[in-house]
Length: 68
Image 1 (cartoon, helix red, strand yellow):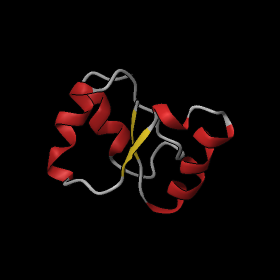
Image 2 (tube, one colour):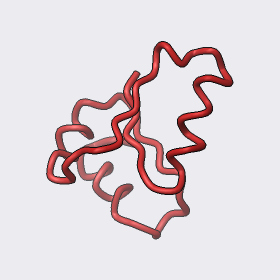
Image 3 (cartoon, one colour):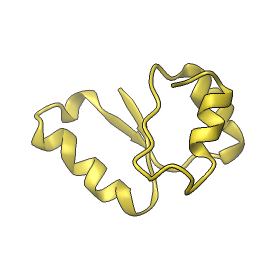
Image 4 (cartoon, rainbow, N blue to C red):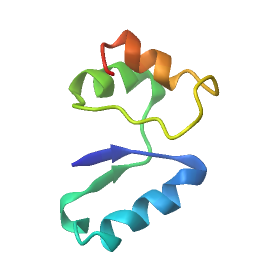
C-alpha cells in the first residue's frame, strides 16, 4: 500500500503502520509534484482527507477524479 502524506499529519501517519504490525506493507510517498495528483487520484482505490471539509482543495480534486 502506498500513502501520500505530508505536513503536520505525516509523523503520526508514519507511526501507525508500526503500531498495527503492517509496516512492511506500507510505503509513504512524501515528496511528489503536485502536478502529478490527477495520476495519483486515478490510480487510487480510496481517498481519505483527514481535514474538515472546506479547508482545502484536495477533496474537491478527488471528487473531480470520481473518488468518493
